[in-house]
Image (cartoon, rainbow, N blue to C red; front, side, top):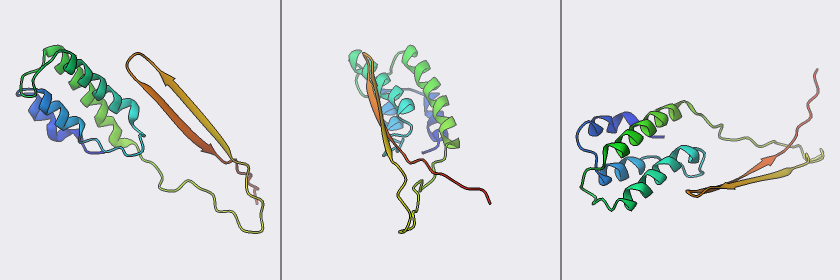
Length: 127
């Protein structure tokens, strides 16, 4: 994730649709791990489009306050880490562990989402 501190000073000047688009595009999340947070930017952008605001026109104060709250949430994302490999190496002579696929989805008037988890229970023995 890109730290959000770089765009904070611009919010003290003039917030436009172009600034919000530039800020929201800085969030690189190819597999959607922080989708619930980045979704808020997309919903905010929908609000701006409904107001028919030009790309270089200032947005209303209500939008600016929502944006500042979202930026604060984004700062907390820097603490999230994801291990690069979560698989299990099984020797050739052992039985493969049972695998499960769990899929969840939900929707609202503003958005929808789905996620799938692969679960592989592991039995360990203590020495």
